[in-house]
Image (cartoon, rainbow, N blue to C red; front, side, top):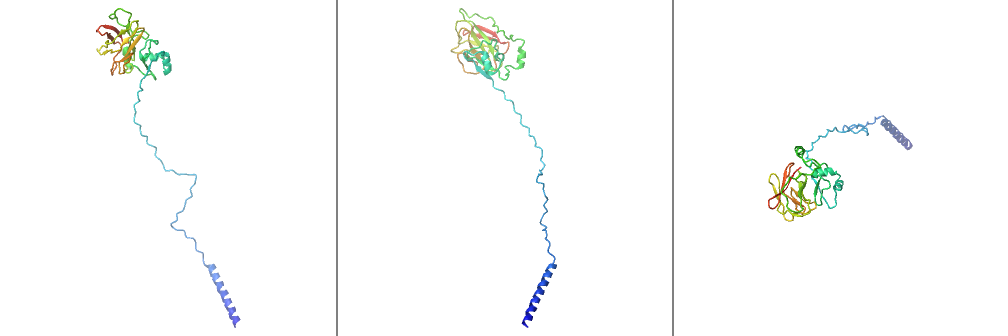
Length: 260
């Protein structure tokens, strides 16, 4: 009976395994469930970049700024310098320097004289003043003609106002008083007067040596030297057509000249 029982057990086991295998084959496989939380991803072309629209920039107007006025350029004449060399140094013409300083002769400059250099076309006098003075101005090339005055006395002294420089520009305006004789003249106490009776008095050390030596009298403010004196005015003294009067220390009129 024992072999029969063992065979029955084996057969029952095989039958049971066959049933389980068959049942397992018939059961449907669970499908994958997509979570509702997942969001479909849209493919993006890597070569395309979408940019947010931009508004055109708003232009902010710049505040108006005044054009600075260039400061005038001056050159102090050194011994042995010529007007042509000075003109070449600053890249301007001799005629421009002569016009800016009221020079009538290119050869008549002296050591220590300050010249206004018209770099960039500096206007020496306003156009209106030039037009008004055209009728009375002395022709270019002709020296100012002094009005006959009281003689200086015995000797070889010959004092004249030879040059008018920078008329109308207080920083450059000056007159040049020269002694064309061969006798020195001490002009301490002499006075220069304009038509408004504005007076300048020469102080110590003012001497006009002969041979064309001279003294420049500037209308503006500066430091006096042996060849340059400063009136100390803040506005121009001279105008075209005005009469320059120079009196000696005793009050005698010695020199008169007309501003060109």
